[in-house]
Image (tube, rainbow, N blue to C red):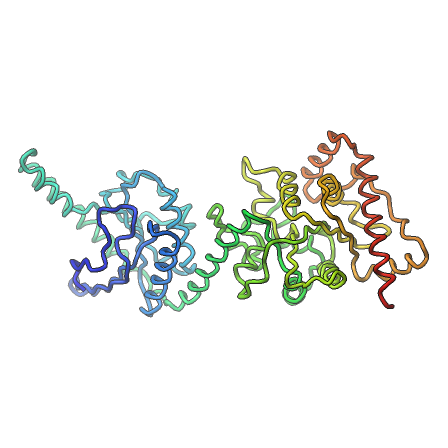
Length: 487
């Protein structure tokens, strides 16, 4: 195709929009070198997200048809005053469609910029947003001399003609030199098999799902379906992580023990590589990772239950308890979405909060208020680990304060002992609660909660009594249900 063909060009005077809206292929001979150039639509289009999605699919499809490429060239205007939200959005879209193998084949061209001295924003900002360091030799700066030539014609009566000619000659020489650098870099790059881009279509779908989850999360906390946890997650843990019995063990493996967090974390369910739409950084909650990567749309939804529990619980026992709860209450496990902190908190943000981030206590309270229903999962009825953790005691106290419905359930394996205790008329013999002696995985969380309780009018002793009575009442309701069950 002729480079002068403007059939697919948009308004060249509008700096906010992509200049092309269709794929155009050019073939160019430079001596013995034969170049095949595929010009694709850009990102950051003012047409909105739908146009961006259309362009992303167009780019991926065109690259896949080539069979192989040597260079992926990203063109920016170097005269742009700053990294705008529009540019950030475009870079996030680019990151979403490129496989890891493609980053070594990227060359960045800055137009309207004769050299890096004229660049109006920092390369390090661009590298951070791309999630990849573009080396200096892959940074090409070009100020189109033909544009300068057109300006010289417009200004020929106001400037010295001889000096203008000298400046134009210099501009053409610099542009030719920079284009030569570009060609030199391109011909040295290894061929990239575009089979790698087959995964890009899936990545685009995942990005769309993450965007939807991000917007839904603003309206209501998202939870994971009990059916998914019971049928898929539990089995996956058996297959992939048979040595890890508890969520605490699994969490330490994935994110590292407290005070020694892993960076990057183990990429469980791909949560560590997916890009969070909220800040453009890699790392989302397991809940959002499940929603983005699973083909079924009903594995994640608006949370219907806030689950109060302990990370040291056995994985299989905990999930079975949730499933049993659904069966007892005639709830469809596929439509019961539970908010469980292990899955629903973005641990990248929770374990390493950014400066100015909302305090954990505020985040918890807001989440509980929005879900409006809580279930306490106890490992046993007489001396539960549940009472030895400060977060769980605090969660029950706050739920009571907010007037939120609270229910209690037990591990399935603990129900036999509980049923025997019920028949014997003795379900009240569980250990006393002492919230000031309870612990937490994050010591600072324990201190903040205890300080909050010291300031509260109820005081720690009343907190112990209120939580004790609440759990006892929940167990009494569970006892009545157990007596109605056979066996």
